[in-house]
Image 1 (cartoon, rainbow, N blue to C red):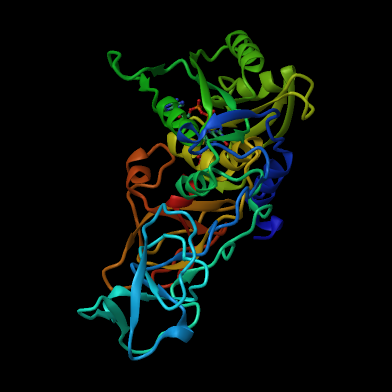
Image 2: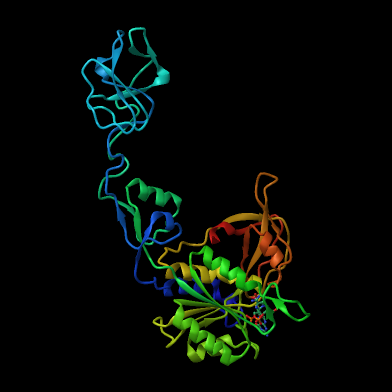
Length: 412
Ligand SMILES: Nc1nc2c(c(=O)[nH]1)N[C@H]1C(S)=C(S)[C@@H](COP(=O)(O)OP(=O)(O)OC[C@H]3O[C@@H](n4cnc5c(N)ncnc54)[C@H](O)[C@@H]3O)O[C@H]1N2
Ligand code: MOO
């Protein structure tokens, strides 16, 4: 999208995202964590292999290990038995070895034949049905990687496969970056917590639990400062507490332009605003700055809009990549593919729109359908959506045409 089509004063979404990713400073330090507690953590240093993998030539099948050159119509007597866990042995000349999957292939053997392709005669000699090839069914020492090879690089997110890889090397503890401490602030005089008695005009605080869940899913430690009134002094105090106790501050609400919206002026006063307003719908009044001296040495503050879906979309597209960068993770581009729209709709003037859609696969190809009402206060559609249809500014959705689709799965 060209900047010329943007609504006045708003930053292009790609530019805002790139700025945030560039600004993210990885948290410093490292801690040693047992593998059992390391899922989701970020590797602090490269990990190299301690051992060749596999460590020895071993059998890929339950069967018989032999020297091909010795195979004849007379068969080979079974002179050795090698279960998994046995040490490396040597194959006596003129005989073969009964062997099991994973067991070290005895020195001298150059082929393993699976037991399904073998016949044993009354004398206990082994006969092979069909062809046997040199090296067949032997997993060679170091064929996957060698001692000293880099297995995982710093910044890697430790998932189940990465943890298994480390375990397979005998590694019990892993150096990871410290968890990012994030202070969470909800602003708004109208807010009450779920469980409190409702009265008309009050609003249940849904952003708090949503952002807490998103932060925890992102492996952050959350310092929840609760609801702060729409009052500059209360906000100053909360920002000071957040700045002293956290690596990063996420707040929601009060970030727009009304005189009840204090986040932006207070941020300006206590630090510095880097940008405010992104050409996206929902999520427009997103604010980014630093508490302290306004430099990246200060504590970053992400101001998400109060409207719940604006807050969610702002998290997915802008806040999350910044948090990932601060966690030392590599932030990839948005994953998207083109999907046909199953509806028509007027485009959003001056702002890229992220429509909450479901995918219908009934015809064998995905068709995007609106997940429900698209207001930025409408959580139901957001709760049903499979992803976003990303519409360029000023562009109508035409039923049957294809548009970029961002699957929700990429947002964690
Ligand atoms: N004159 C203008 N008004 C508004 C503009 C604008 O450009 N000019 N932008 C609109 C857009 S777009 C959005 S998005 C909202 C965002 O405003 P704020 O971030 O200042 O949010 P609030 O005014 O505090 O609240 C908006 C809305 O969301 C509800 N809310 C707030 N916090 C929560 C929460 N924690 N949980 C659930 N719901 C929450 C709040 O009650 C309001 O209904 O501004 C538009 N206005
Ligand atoms: O950006 Mo606001 O989210 O349009 O409602």
